[in-house]
Image 1 (cartoon, rainbow over the protein chains, first blue to last red):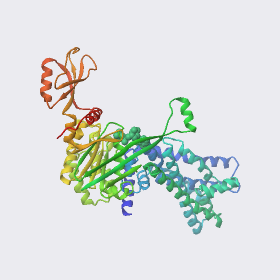
Image 2: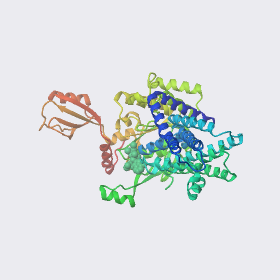
Image 3: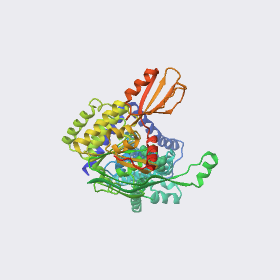
Image 4: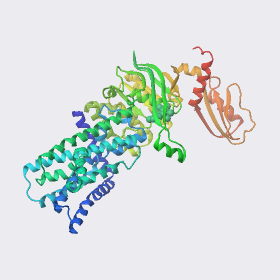
Length: 260
Length: 335
Ligand SMILES: Nc1ncnc2c1ncn2[C@@H]1O[C@H](COP(=O)(O)OP(=O)(O)O)[C@@H](O)[C@H]1O
Ligand SMILES: [Mg+2]
């Protein structure tokens, strides 16, 4: 276990060093990621300015959902964001063996070596928007904060699971740069109040691909709007992440040639 | 006692046929035709502790596939491998601690940071203690002569410098067996010599077993005690280096570019054979160095013709394989 912690520390150190070596690139790509992901809350502001709204949700409540969504994405891509591209390039160049030569769990090693410093900007941007929104929505109880924390982690687990599933696909669809768009389109649902969607979509978004947990449910927890039944959705989140891990490891085994 | 024991090793890859042309490509969207490639076909051998074994073969022979299976990165389709009592692929996580590997075309260094930080990564991965790490690093950098190189970012290093660092990566945890896949590919002569010397020293000092694949006969001549030749996934030769030399004879290929046309000049004689005449000015000869030394041969030629360019090379691996097939049909030469 200590060895795994040491390896992760060394990997973070390397990632930071790389970011420092390409300072300009790091700053520019952090900004691009941030801008690309912070624009949609602005759209929300415009919608409310124009006098329309999501029924039952004030502007700051919607912004709260979207800031949590952004923080969650930032955190997930900080840790898991590099896995897709790294897997893809290893499979394409036939260099996945280099990972298998290390006396470590290969999934851990890939996750550790792809620590994506440029997503720190996204996380911080989300956090800034979050603090701003929280200050506008009134007092929040300690219990709500606790519920929020649990749900936020569950939501991040969903994103991690999704990242791993996309990466697993790249074993088969080598060089398909559209894979990540697939994930993005599924995720859109998490950016808005869930009740605006049809019942069927709501069910899928809480139980099957629990993207509702990425922004909507943690925000509801902070606003004191969750019911006991909403907590049932926490379990599918970790199941979803487990599924991502399982699928990825299964693809590694296929790569090693166990399947035949 | 043998440290590596391979029995009937076979690897079949399954891929999908990609059609040529629009029509076939379109069809392959819907129905993909499976094709299987027999990359390694029923190979058996055993290797003793402290041996350096060269695995020689043309491109696509199955060398890399065999090495990957020996390293535990690929499961065999059938057959068995036992290395140091492990089954490499099945016991991979424990097994890989005991081996080192350098893949000539696949870097294990982290591209954007200096090699020293990649070394520290391996220190963490293998759980090497700080004093052990420092001692070992000092020893390896002295042997490979790379003290000034380790602090520069990997991406600015020359191929030779990088390759030496790859060896440090592979050796820090003191492996018992070293697997090398085309370790000298693309290197200049000086770097090749240095790396070969390093392998020899590691082998002598620590009795380290080493398997290296190559398509360069020179690597094998310089390093190996034992030679396995594979072609189309099959083992076609497995014996000592001396025995291989007996099979091949002592031949070198010398190419000249002459200052004047040598069209019509006869070069064939008892110890020389014309291999190729790409133009009136160029010729490649195969020289039997058992009968005439290379320097004597060149002196003879230069007395008659002036030339602007010359190169001396080992027999190409395709020729070696062909010679082996041919001599196999005849009764074996005796030592
Ligand atoms: N991952 C793979 N999938 C399908 N075929 C492969 C794969 N890797 C290698 N091959 C095929 O297997 C054969 C042996 O390849 P390889 O072991 O790389 O040979 P060598 O290292 O001797 O050049 C070649 O025909 C190659 O095209
Ligand atoms: Mg090869």
